[in-house]
Amino acid sequence: MKPTLMIVEDCEITRERLENAIHHGGSFRLISSVGTFKAAVSILENCPPDILLTDIDLPDGNGIDLIQMLKQPNIKTELAIVITIFGDEGHVIEALKAGASGYLLKDDEFIEINNAITQMVQGGSPISPAIARYLLSELSYKSTSIIDETTPQLSEREHETLLLVSKGYTSKEIGKMLEVSFHTINAHVKSIYRKLSVSNRAEAIYEATRQGII
Image (tube, rainbow, N blue to C red; front, top):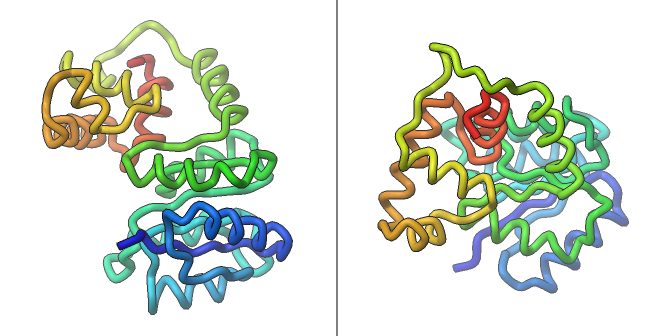
């Protein structure tokens, strides 16, 4: 069965382009496409999709607040990806800390949205190249080579796993590269999340780079 998806985008032209891209890709079942925060909340509470694709700036609310809602136990939506015009560090970090697993700019080709969502479903964290370059440059500038006592200590295998995660490989691909099972890699990833106090891969990469771990 195809994963279900909801689009939340207030611009009708942009929303239609996203809808067409999803239908053209054929990998996901679009169950709802709305233009307001209120409509999105109603769907999340009554018929939650597997995946949320949302803009940040909505006429009656904020897409990041929608992502925060996914932490509620009664909402079964597990994955969220942001697509927006905002490429500044503040919006990006706020979205990732809220729980977004991906962050895309509207300047990107929308036909690639299917690849991005597929990558996310497989355990990746799709981020627009421009955003990735900006974050890495900012984090490289801020990070130091000195690791103090408060820096989480990862095992050698966890560090190897995290480096491969930061390069965009899925758990299955990392398992093949390190010659261990998919489940073993997932266990390493969960341990990394716990040690870094994060909840997704994008946030783990951010924290590890900020703290000079990778």
